[in-house]
Length: 260
Image 1 (cartoon, rainbow, N blue to C red):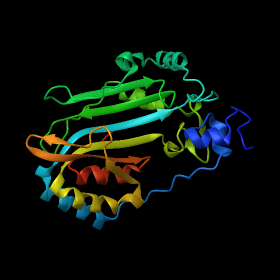
Image 2 (cartoon, rainbow, N blue to C red):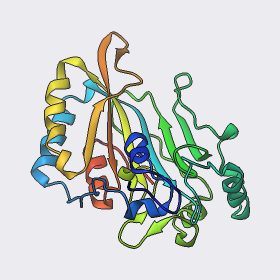
Image 3 (cartoon, rainbow, N blue to C red):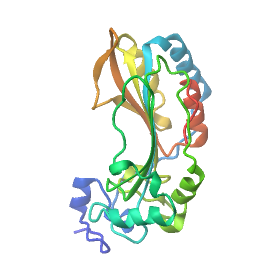
Image 4 (cartoon, rainbow, N blue to C red):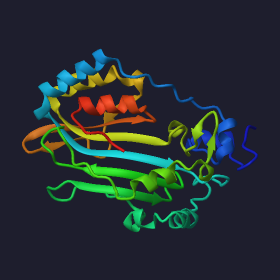
């Protein structure tokens, strides 16, 4: 029976949970390897740009999120040990304890009519430490969301990319608990409310971007709802470990300013 001799995870456990138990599981179990993501061709972006401009009143940005995940080096992963106190102490050691979300939980909803900014670390999830930049907004279209950076954002990124702290492998990059997050450990996503009469065309365009790392699906938390009198479908669009050029072009076409 195939198993990891370092953490004891058996192949049947890995197949059932979809989670690594430690750094060494990456070299033991078989899983779909992350594919290299090429820059989205200009004609594809132009098609999306034309659609967005034509239907700007039918597409409403609800939220934008950037999430970076890390696991502590030379430790069991949260499947076996969440190591919350150790992770919290690490934030203290680097002077980042004030960036921990109150209660350790990120905001999950829009409050009132104003945009809500949520930036911080949270612990004890699928990975030891996660940092998130989360923006909820009720802008009428995709143009211009409120942009803000935490005062200590340089310290935050230096911390997140301090390789001696984190589980990693030369041929893989940073190792997350989930195989699909290997590499940069980063996922960018946004929620948009799309009027039902343009959903079919919007999905057809998004399907042309799948080979370049873009993922999309109706949001399981929202599905169909209303914005005013208009019936909409809430769609989650995301991309994992995308290149800087890819994200810049995609955000630009959607009328956004970018992300961290």
